[in-house]
Length: 343
Image (cartoon, rainbow, N blue to C red; front, top):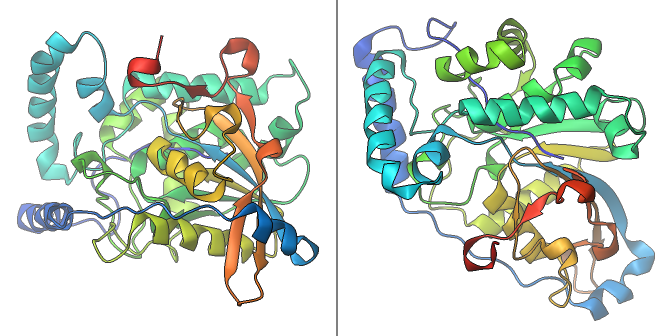
């Protein structure tokens, strides 16, 4: 399960203190984006290879959770489309106001007000006693041994913190920031503001929206004290393909000897590519290869790893274990068709 998106006001410890330094850092972010990202999806593991290595495989349970709606999506993806120029003009004004704070509504786009409401709905479901779903108890850290991870984009961090605030306040857990889980796209909203090894800060835009639904002060405190940045190598570059970054995540997941479950707050395109890479070519459970995960949705599955006779380490998703947790099937499920297929 994954989580995404939140932010913090200016004046944080370690932030650039002069306008010149802030502008330079923002330019560096744009330079990173200028290097076009390459993405290649690897061929999934062959069923024959999987069966051959069954006796020596290991498994890890994983949960994916995309972020709520971002400010970028609010401008360009929301209907009606003819209002895009007006929404864009308003966002440009917000961008100019945020520039002195090294903040942005476009680069490393934060959650929108709708995105915060979506995350709040997930949090309400998690804390309710309406059902006793195993995944819900796992997310609340009541069963099993789980580790929390997030993309290095702020909307993923904020989603995780806002949705799991009760859990984090009950337990002194750290959240691992992983650059390998950064969204797969060339759009500027997928460029990370946070530098390598640095702690992310919440956008003041997010904090204002989160204060009403998720408790702004608690989110600010979590940003300051709970992030582990060893896996934050900065924004993605052209030196690594999307496939290589997904493979890095698999390696990281199976290196977590302290946990049996990985809860990841990530992004819908990254997740869709992950399912295409690690599911059998003939399998498409829940339409996860062709459909897009809903914002603030939760999906779980089992991920296997094994070594072939040639010494190659292979990762594979067990198709029968892919489960839409939130929204439940009765509410349309966690996946939605896009484009012409969408009704």
